[in-house]
Image 1 (tube, one colour):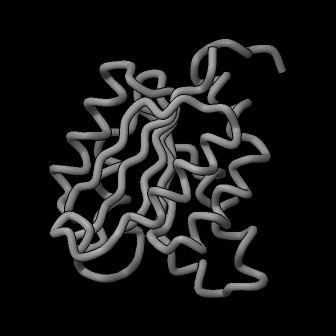
Image 2 (cartoon, rainbow, N blue to C red; image 1 turned 180 degrees about the vertical axis):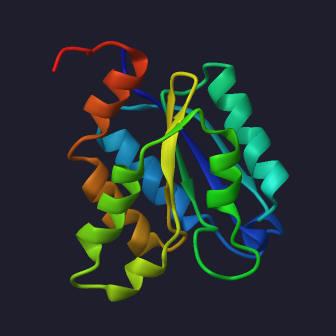
Image 3 (cartoon, helix red, strand yellow; image 1 turned 45 degrees about the vertical axis):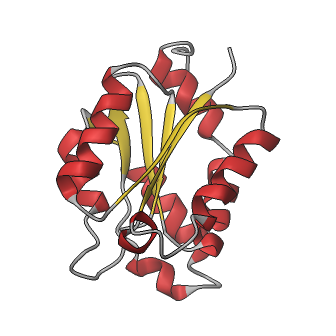
Amino acid sequence: MALRLAILTISDAGHRGQRADASGDAIAAWAAERGYTLADRALVPDETARIAAVLASWSDGGAADLILTTGGTGLTPRDVTPEATRAVLDKEAPGIAEALRMAVYPRFPRAALSRGTAGVRARTLIVNLPGSTGGVRDGLAVLAEFVDHAVDLVRGERTEH
């Protein structure tokens, strides 16, 4: 079965129609190249309750094997994606978030300022990516190395070590 991906863009300006969802588009293009099924896609403002509600709904309903968020991972007062994500996770996967930051850090030290997290709810892997298109592309390059295997583990399809 093809991996089912859902994309959640978190952006006040995007929600108001003042900015195109370029980072969400980059994720959708990457997913298409990999043969993934786009299960759902939404854009919400930087509001903890709205973000958490979408993540929980998609995970609990079994809509997606993988949810990638984009946006809201920085240090500004409105950046609440990691908090919203942690609120719905059954278990965290800190190594994923660490890999996303550290792979980019040598050439872009400000990657250390990203607070994105990753983890599992139900049988869905959730990963926070930055809001910039460049940050998304960098993150997707890292995820490409292991995300299929991670999703298989979350689905319970590969349990041997």
